[in-house]
Length: 95
Image 1 (spheres, rainbow, N blue to C red):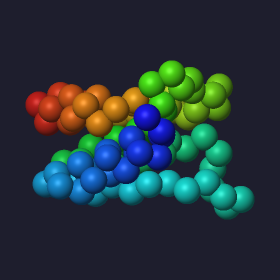
Image 2: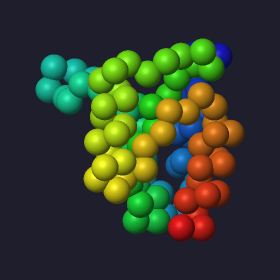
Image 3: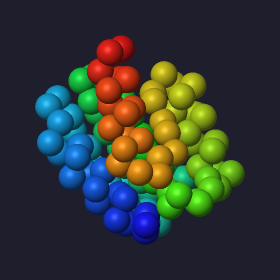
Image 4: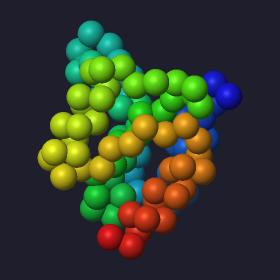
């Protein structure tokens, strides 16, 4: 499955969740390189999702950005499916 297809499914799901605001980031010459594909605020929690195809790997910069988000007490994940995001949402809902 293509990353774009996975991303669209995730965004569609996020838009149905109460207390959730999410958007797709778009890289350009004015944005920070390595920022995850989807940024989300869910019930007061900061989440970031780097979407990859099932065999996709994070770049070194993406790994560094995810670590920086986690060090700032945000939640950041590499995801390869909508099901992973749904599981994360169930877990985050209990925090």
